[in-house]
Image (cartoon, rainbow, N blue to C red):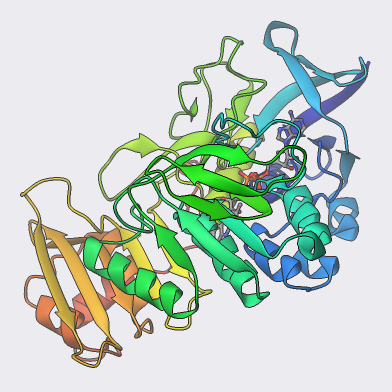
Length: 432
Ligand SMILES: Cc1cc2nc3c(=O)[nH]c(=O)nc-3n(C[C@H](O)[C@H](O)[C@H](O)COP(=O)(O)OP(=O)(O)OC[C@H]3O[C@@H](n4cnc5c(N)ncnc54)[C@H](O)[C@@H]3O)c2cc1C
């Protein structure tokens, strides 16, 4: 049986963070990463650009040389099918076994695929979650002119915008009453929707797909409202869930996300988790939940890696952030954008020309979330204020109205709080 001191299931950003964390404390011991994908470590934020024609090399995040330099073995194109935690080993498709001393589960998320009547045996139905999905969409572009996207969240709107740029007729179906419901407040959601409608994308809100029509090839979809939309392809983008495929029938605590403590340890002593698979601390509401974001997966990976190798880093938590970089007018949001109850104060302002909108959500004088449209320069300051929970009562009007938020007019103590020097992950080893 193959054995490695550290085994990481997954080879993307959480895995890379973990490799860096491990190597801070342990320069020599063997590390093995395993991924069913053949491409190793790559940027999912670039998948839309790849569909539009960018070369696949542009997706690469850490190449072969990086893994060699870090002394990491890579098993790519190999799927882990089972975990035998009590024997500290895992099983790989084809029957091979791999033993470990420390295991990191960095298996990411998996797309939620609704059961839709008529979906079986149709070729042009896609997800939009990983490289293979993007490659299939890119290779099929000449086979469809009209496409229906299910879901108006971040990935749904991104793929809709991308395919619209490629001159496809795109219709987006959304069960909720507005687009980007998790990322934006109702007003900014309306702005985002009209920016996309102006580009020629159609939206069908408060609706869902009843059936995909056509015998072998797709000819259209029938909606619950009774409408029929002609199309030759369907993309499901309803959301990504923590990937429980190999975890849910084990002794690990997995309940819509892998449960980990502040050191990224699971309930099994030599098993850790990081990235989209875990429930991580959201600092804006103190809840543990999936926070599927690239920088957070990297930071959690570092924390897990350091702790696996004998250091002691706590994970201080992260906050949900969204950058709708694909729209013509930039939109950024972070934290709580739609307050869950009346205990929050909401301030908002809008330029009458419709080129600037900002809303701030506060609780007890502290910033909990924001949306900024058309003027995004000060977003780093706003996220710093959320992370550090500075009392902004005296400056909230400046923060709301200034298109370029100026630090210089703020008190020194306030500036120092935001820019307290930290290492690149924002974490300190509590052993040091
Ligand atoms: C289209 C798209 C655009 C995005 N854009 C942004 C953005 O702009 N900004 C941002 O912050 N975030 C963005 N994200 C989210 C971001 O990409 C994720 O948060 C990040 O990739 C999570 O990293 P991860 O390492 O936890 O998991 P993943 O990147 O999902 O990697 C999971 C790894 O596990 C492997 N794996 C899973 N199961 C097994 C198994 N059984 N056996 C072997 N290997 C396995 C996979 O092969 C893969 O290597 C985007 C996501 C998508 C889908």
